[in-house]
Length: 330
Length: 267
Image (cartoon, rainbow over all chains, first blue to last red; front, side):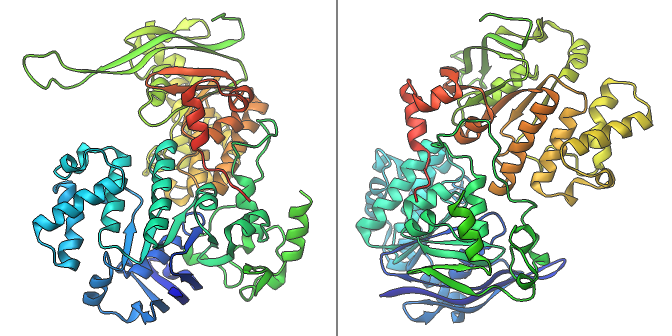
């Protein structure tokens, strides 16, 4: 059953250089209990997509299209109604565990906030629930930690607290935006394992946003690769990574030094020439045209058509055959 | 550690302890043992990588090697000369031979100065070069890092993150140093741009024979750039050796944990 359906979502930001379309005509469906990854570099629109779903776009931005949660378009909701959705039906974990907690309140109070608001619990009831949640996310001695302030916890523990907050009302959908980017690799593994297990146990759906291909490839069932606000490639994670077809996905993959690469170290990495373009300067046609090796004049006027290369595996490119042949021969 | 004439930098049994603010009047203030006895040497034209998680002491080590921190114990010798014995003026003069590239390309360049002045600053401070000479050398290093002559009159905000890191590298290169200490040089950059900067570091090594001390939390980055690698935890090297050996056959439990935690891309 479709839980979240994003249809033709466009996010526009008013910048000093004029309106910039940070997300362009993005559509995807997320079924109940499924996981979706969005991967891309800074400015590709992955975080704005998450914020648009949550109704938390910055003041200079607005969203067009449809974001339906169980059939209702969230973009039509008033701020009051959105407040009832956030934290209750959609939970969110942000990137910075250092800045997204309030330093002046105990973590217990912050986790209880949503339950008092959405579930009408009183302090005593919520306290018991907070302790259960802290235990669930693997914080030792949860009964003592209820009264801790964020500065008394390590970065990994703070991120666990953020997860406890997101889970407090048993949301149907969890949006995790770069949940481990500020953490060390060993802590990152713990947090991702925790999120993955909780998702399975609680039957939630998840959107995991990350710039890290490894994190995405190991934690979600489906993936969307974004560039310049558009979806360039998408499909089941395993199929996409075993058969990368868009020149950008291929370039991104080759540009990452691989730890388990058996080839000798100290060789050149394959790079994508140029840099991520400014949002206000994005070209009309394919957003990747300025950095693409296969670019032709046909790429410039209009966005490339979406082609299905395998079941559920879609690629938006005019030169898929060339790209796939070159990738297979590498 | 055997020092040869080819040794650029030799670090001997370095300890660095910081004293924390006193908490009570009845106890001595607590100390943080950031580095507890680290020794290594880097040969000319080689790259030595230090990996570890936050708080392991790797950035403190970089600062000690640069002479930006005083040592609690031990010595750092640059071409046989202990830089921690030198007077401030001598150290200032020595610094032309070892330069540093910092992590954050947004914080490490003065936003009010033009690129020409930012890049020329080390030679302005250390050498008496004429204006023409200075400009010629700025253009030379900017070309070496893949920037253009016309970029000299721009301000840092006109550049992307990767280009700013190139400017920072150009500033480090302009004194023609023997050693560049790079503390997390690519961790603030996008993946596609990170690869460009990593390739640049290697090209510069091939071209100018620069020696690198590279500090990173990213094992793959260190594996890609370095000949030799040390894994640091709680202020000591728990394991060190040629990069390929460490990654192919890690011995210490901590190294194994660290390697196992890296998310692999599985197709």
